[in-house]
Length: 99
Image (cartoon, rainbow, N blue to C red):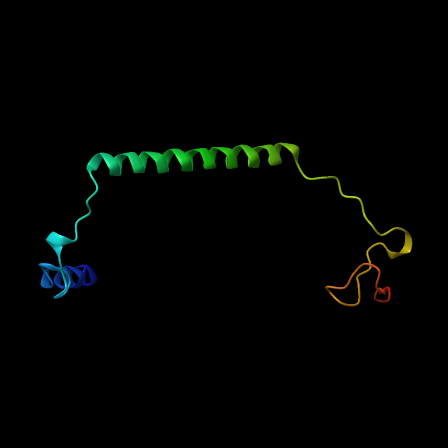
């Protein structure tokens, strides 16, 4: 409540200016017509609906396909062992097997 009333006081207190002493509210309105604003709004809604539609279609396609099957790249005795460093490549030495 207090924040809203403070905002009202600040906005009403600076009338009739948008920028105090520089730009009056009567001079700050947009020259656009209501038809231009409506056309622009409809164009944005259509564009975003198309983008959202394609995005939803693509995500649904990926979900229907599912994950690719896992095939371990390490075979034999090295299965389950970790590299010595967390971000090291697979061809680097592995830490000793813990018993």
